[in-house]
Image 1 (cartoon, rainbow, N blue to C red):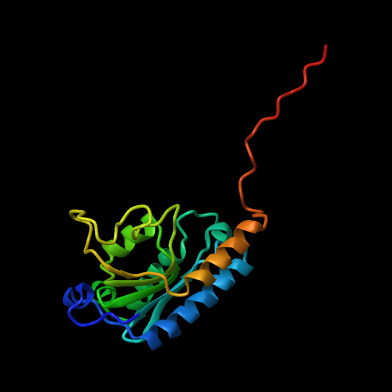
Image 2 (cartoon, rainbow, N blue to C red):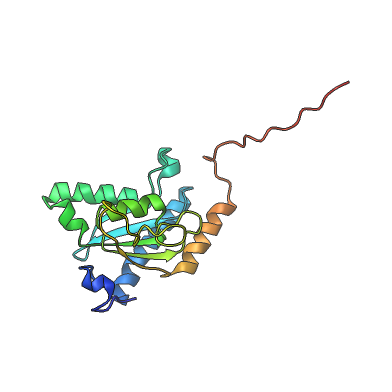
Length: 191
């Protein structure tokens, strides 16, 4: 799981991460995902790490807030901005040196936000085959997209099976916040 010197991440100014760091931070992200699951949210959790410190963390809050943009990564971005404001740090400087650890591949919306914030490295668990923005559906992470920030390095597959199992558990249960089905039943005609 370590990004070696001379790799695209190392030469583009991204931070390298050790196996021990990855294990530590992904364990915490998995706890965030479990918290999301316990709160009837899609089980995605993430941490944003700057100088070996958690400056932002998030879990999905879509059902709780009734706001479809409150994905774990967006919640964490807001926390990083708050942290920067409180500590007097430059958000652009912080984001350019922050590593995101997330249990599921960021969706297209979140990948675009990460790119705009110039996050250099994303370590994630399982792929997001329906909405993935780091290669599963679209590759926002490395595509040639003018005026959209910098491409970022991805390290996929860390604890992927565990992340998939949490997603399966979520989708097996009834989502009380899901919209009601709009399928109409044919009315029986009485003669």
